[in-house]
Length: 289
Image (cartoon, rainbow, N blue to C red):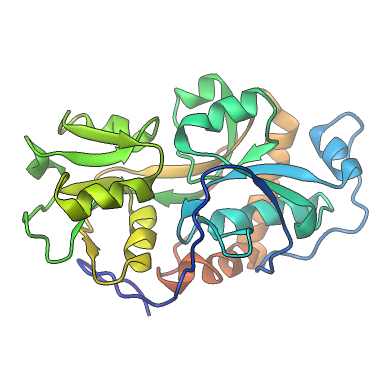
C-alpha cells in the first residue's frame, strides 16, 4: 500500500530502538547487489585502500524511518543503508564488514573532515555551502521539503505561507532549517527529527518541517497521529558525502549509481525499504563536476 495525499497509511511496521550515538557493524540482509570478487583499483586510490582493508565506515542516520533507522538488533536499515551497501559491494566489501556510524545533520561535514567516516549517506542535501568543505557524489534521490501536522490538520495549514507567527520544529544544521527561515523565524531546532514529534503532539509547535520522505517515515511509524500537507516547496537532491577533492572516488561512486539504475539494484533497494510505503520514483541523473 502506498501513501496518498493528505493521509499516511501504514503499510509496514518499522520497529525502532532509537539510539543517538555510537557505531555498529551490519550483517543485516538487504537488497544489495552481489559483492564483487577481488576487484582491482589503481594503487593509492581510496577504492584500493578500502578494498584492501576489506572494511568501510559509513555515516548514516539512526532515526530516519525508511532511510536510516537503527533496528532492534542494533543494525541500521533503510534506503540510505542499502545505497551504502551497493557502494561497498563494488569495493568487494561484504555488508557485515561495514561499520555504520550515526551522523546527525549537524555533524556530517565534521565527521568527513576529521576522517571519522569514509562516506556519509544520510538524507544529505547537496548544496553549495557544503561543497566548500566536502564533495558529493550523486544525487541518488530527489526529495522535497514539506510539513507534518497533527492528523486532521486542525490548524488548516496548506503550505509554508500559513506559518507566519506560528512555531515549527526542525533539525539544527539542516537545509530545512535554512529554508523555513524564509517563512518564519519562530523555530524550535533539535538534534533529530524524532525529537520534534513531542512538541507537535503537545501543541508547542503546529508543524514539523523537513523532506517529505523523512516525514512520511515518521508518520508511518506513528499511525493515525500525523499527516503530511503533501505540498513540497523545495527540491532536495540527496548526495553521498565524501572527502573534499577525492575526484577518483567520486567518479567511482557515480559509476556505481549509474550502473545500479540500469541493472535494477537501485530499484530493488528502494522497493525493499522506502518502497514499502512510497511509490518507486525515477532516479535522478548524477552530476559530474
